[in-house]
Picture: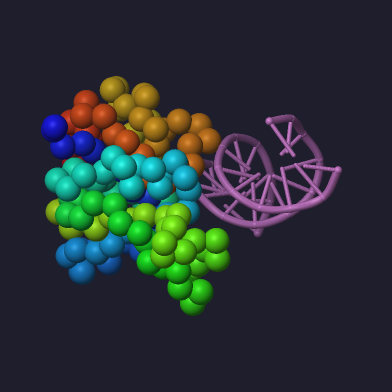
Length: 152
DNA sequence: GCCAACGTTGGC
DNA sequence: GCCAACGTTGGC
């Protein structure tokens, strides 16, 4: 099975590509959306590539690339009432939320801004560019990934 | 900071 | 199981 491509959103004020670059490898915790959870738990595999996207910042952009190094496992922050994302309905026997570990690959010299991406042929159907799309873990097709990598 | 679009919760 | 109310996301 060929490696797949994904896009992970993050608010750089909270966690940015520079934080990931500093750490090298890190867990991607805090995802609290079922559709995104299902991707993390079931579909994202070691070796898959991940585009990192900065939201709610100027400029909003895809800023770099990472690689999955550990497949879905329970996001332990859900069990910790002191964490930023506790879930009282989750238990260790019955976890609700999952995360993966990713490793920093590269930071793009020029970020691929949202406004620029809207003009790029071949990306019209990207989940990121759909109106009202709030999904924080998104699949990216091989074709879209090829276009994105050629733009960087 | 606003607010439209979206997702989740909970009363019935 | 419907759906109104509520909470959150994220582009602008």
